[in-house]
Image (cartoon, rainbow, N blue to C red; front, top):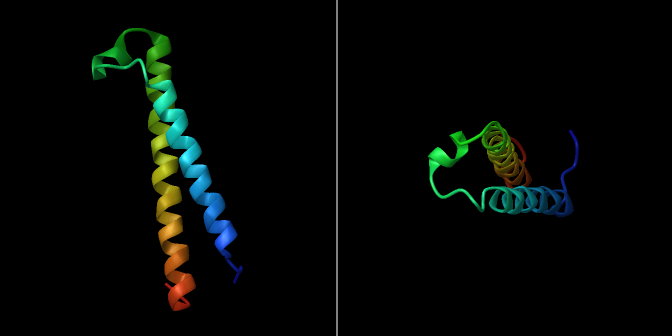
Length: 75
């Protein structure tokens, strides 16, 4: 089994923070959900935002699992 360090968890948290900041930056001009439908470019932003949110969720889930393993030895 691979050893997980606090530095690995910190790297994952920094990844999540970076993705959140990117999402906020890219969606800053969106006032309503309908804004995403205004143009093909806005739809691309919507698609990218959905994928980004998915990676954030998966990373947070992995952090949760890894910290559980660190504390308890196994899942």
